Length: 593
Image 1 (cartoon, rainbow, N blue to C red):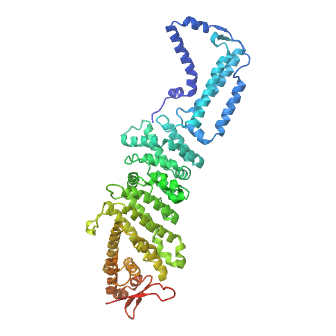
Image 2 (image 1 turned 90 degrees about the vertical axis):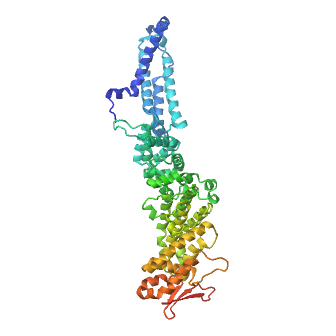
Image 3 (image 1 turned 30 degrees about the vertical axis):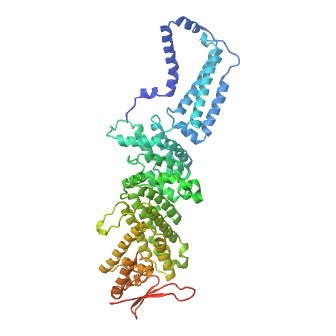
């Protein structure tokens, strides 16, 4: 920073200019009068004569003191919103107003003292009321100007007040008073465009600068966006000033490739929108429950609906879909449902791209769902009340999310099926494959459920399989099923190389949900997963007896739900749920070995 001399600092004081301005004006006026030969007329007005005492003074000292006291009271007790607007104005109007106010008081005192002693006075000024009218107009004008700024036309972030506005915001954000942070957040809504534009220009025009050069208004805009990464102001912004969030993201969306310093801000805002049950993500649920805001979703669309901005933030650091640790491992089913709505808004923008490529934001958002379904393996310990648990509600939220993703993908042309040798996948094929990976993670977790046959069937089939693959048909669902078959098939074949519990669980899941017959056909249409079911049944038929002998624990991992092993007949028995008190239907798989 450049060091400013003491002389320059003194000359910048408002009181010095208040005293020097009238003197300089008088000197200039006299020089012009001499040039225009108006001096004789002016000399008559400047002729000195004894001061005349004026009766019924217009603006005496008592009136001034009463007005000044009222002015101080208003400034002191006024809302912080109005005082903040006065503080960020350039030039600083509060110090100037105080200087003018005290200057007017001293002038009134001098005028009364001068005229009461009949001192010599220029003829043009030999009326104290005329002088006091000018002072009263100056005081009134100052009051009107402050009222205009505080109530009618507040200032915004600009070149003139960038330094002052940042310093004042920095002071109050560091204090962390919630009421003051809300005021700052509301003020930022009107300045979002300027702040983002200046920061983007700073990023594009940045070059090596000398450390002796003071920061420019572009740099202060950059610092302001960094300041917004404070968690407290993000909390208050989401809770009580959501439109500011929308304005900042809308402005940032105009410069998606400028690498604005809003990673911390976007991550904190995204986390607060999820974990806080009051913000827009819950209010903007759907049109049936939230009316117009549910249909338009203005705030959540601004935050999550621009693919380029969210992806740039996610690829460089953290974006709004990256929930902060440890909140990502402690979210409830309601919060996961809200998070699913945010990901769906982003996914629509993602899928709408002409050539969608690998997305860090989409990939990491799916990992959030994967982290929430690991605990469903413990649902079996809850008995027939498992459907009341939060883990089951998270599972249902994940399944609904997958179905909604498939609907979005169905609106676009479905890419051709590609074998494993064609990896790595790109474009829409990558998205389908990632959704298949998420379903596979759910299947793996569900395969570890150990409970009564009807409970296991309710979780593995009714909640997961039936909801995903036995209702509406679409080419996107067929492609996802294709990738899921490949994942399940690879896991089953891996058991041949070395026995493991994951592969055993997948085999058990297939037999429990799809049946144990090697030839499982439907009369009208070949099922999507018949090849996987036949592979699992064939593997068990050929290898189960050996596995039961060498690795009994792994062999038992296959027997989930209604599956059981009869060592006498050497058969795998699949027992379905009983209906109206009658014994359940049974299917058999004869083992060899």
